[in-house]
Length: 266
Length: 315
Picture 1 (cartoon, one colour):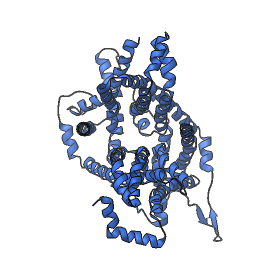
Picture 2 (cartoon, helix red, strand yellow):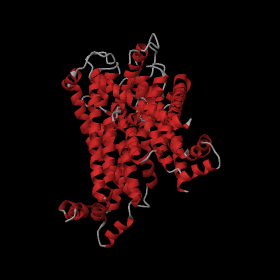
Picture 3 (cartoon, one colour):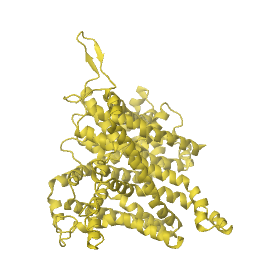
Picture 4 (tube, chains in turn red, brown):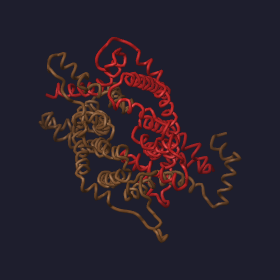
């Protein structure tokens, strides 16, 4: 029984993972408006997609939000992780530990709603932020992405060899020089991974952005959601195919870079 | 000259350091303060606002809820707060059912994810090296494409004139399309599909650590592969099963997008109820009360469980 059961289960598992994606790509080249009825090969939906100002604008907003959020989240997440791994005692250590990991288990609807209510109350009390838009989305994304960066940075900081930092201190470097000249270069690959994860998470978020965004700042997932809510739409298939293409290219480049780095290392 | 050296010698840096010294703020305090203040303001404070608005009443105004303080006719300050919204949640069966059905849907999906994910994780953990990395990459790859578009892919698959029904009809297996979209079944598929990598990765990490000598010993002592699996492999992989199940169950419970796109009008999930209360009925105070109850019933037990687990690992 073991002979055929396991491979069969694995093959079916991968069919389950890939069949919907393959069909998504195939039907993006379909001429028919009925997404799942074949009407001949065509690229008309790609043309329509590129002429859709709403989608292009939303994609640009999403990329900007993702860039700013990922950068801010990397700074805040790294500082948080650094403080928690390097300073053993300070006031509020327990609070910071809880606050930095809690966003990981917080349902998105709660994060979104509570941040929106905060922004509304702050606007009433101190007049900032005036209305909602890109800045509020960046703040919201930074907050939940920082948790992911902190987890990655913390595990790297813990596994790092302490004697490097100690040696630098013994040689007379101040804490700032130790951080920028020793700690940062060592943990840099983990921070790049954290930044990329934060960038992807921000690009992907629909729920939190829907709560805290304002008029004129609809992100790409918000626009896609309003389109597909009413049913399937072929230009979304074209958009999905483009995104899948980008991911594949990125994976191939990353794989090639890693292989080259490994060969150099050997 | 190194980056750190250049930085500490630059004029703006020295100026800031001098000013901070005058104010009695050490560099250490500043480094702690940045993440601390950010999270206090944008993570902790929102929950107090949420709690306070859950005690207000919905009104037609901007913002659409009653203020906490009001000047009485004699000029005294009065606090307006009521537990009315919570009483409403208790009395209306919709909310109770939504909580229970979220837990049910998340649980069923987690079990399916485990049943599908376990054989894959096991197979990858046993595979020889170049194949192993490739399979692992193939598990993670769909995760990098947009979450929304992966759910959308299933809409095209499950629709009554979707890929599955069209195939079955053209093969002559069925005469009329099966209703799959807008059912709980579609929601299970959506959740399992979205979170499957979260199940496979911890299981894989656990199963690769499994000592092959134990399996050999069991076989030498006459256990069949089935018996070995159920008495040795499965119990030893329990931590992986728990970790993977948590990673699927936790996000599934508050899920909004999957039930909204794949579920029917009667697919009740608490995340969706909260969303509709906020965007549909525009009742901010009731939405806040739903969120507070969700926080205590769902998030608090999970965080407690995690801290227990962490302590056990440390001890």
